[in-house]
Amino acid sequence: MGKLRAEKLQALIKQEMSTMLIRDVKDPRVKFVTVTGVEVSNDLSYAKIYVSLYGTEEQQAQAWKGLQSALGFFRSEIARRIDLRVAPVLSFHKDTSMEYSAHIESLLRDIKEKEAHHE
Image (tube, rainbow, N blue to C red; front, side):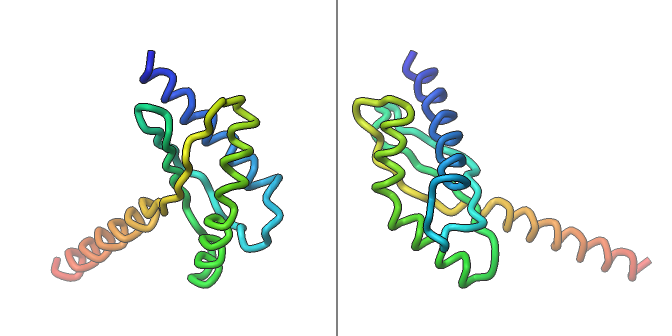
């Protein structure tokens, strides 16, 4: 029962966070942010929200600051929208999997080019 509830809550938080980022956040710094995943603790008291940030380094830094400053808003909205008695403590984490996969792809491309030159 507990695991199913945690998975359900993760899906709901991801959906609501995505909706809030698109429609409700008025902070102009928070652009080009995508929620890639949510991980809820077993006791449902903490939620890690994984986000991908896009744009220049400066835009990403500003978006990160905007997200951090809106944590209280997000927590209260999550509690209200999902109808939770106690909202989990939210924390944002940068999801670097896209950057990592692009890096791996570039390494593989380099290896292929070197192999093609040696043949």
